[in-house]
Length: 311
Image (spheres, rainbow, N blue to C red):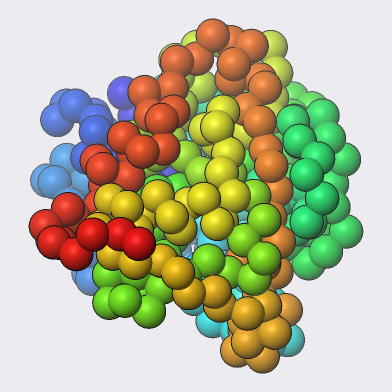
């Protein structure tokens, strides 16, 4: 199979590529190819791009190409200043627009196009409503970002090209990401639940992300939009307790909401609010998650060599 990925050096992209057969033809669009080339197998070819303009990489595209657009600056790594918000938007919207334009100019029907989005589409809220793919968008910064992001693939949705939008939940992995950030303070006895702890976290194991991507590549589905989340959401309070139990560390602390707001500003909405999201369309397609049980997931992903009992 032939793949062209933007954002292919990130957590999801690199894990997906490692899961492919050695005979797969893989191309990654990168701003810094030399930095990453040695970290990937020999069958992976890198192509320089800036996320805004079409280059020679467009010649890769043919009717056997599966394009996976994962590009986008990290949402939670820096405070949301005005300039940072611009980076978050441009890194997603411009890169998606460029890929869609490249497909249009190549005058070929690519085999499939997977477009990443996020459950942030539904807005960061504290109400316990359950969201599925038909739920309305929220009205905060992340929600509008996702709305505008997804809108860039509208030309493909209106064409005969098979295009799928993947609204990604919080990805749990042992390599990097949110789970590491949540568990590290607990590991050092300074962790606890955030704010009220009542906020819902729509999580998903990285291996189920990869499985879902391959499912949507190989299967013909009626729906276009898919929530990539475990069917079993969890509150921040319960997740914190479960992490502590696996690490055998105490989790009696509470991190007050006002402290997080002072430290993170508007970005604190990510951790103080949340969404309870259900993968209705995947379930309707009889997709089978391998990692639904949170306790087993945490035992699979977290180190368990600690000796202090949880209190």
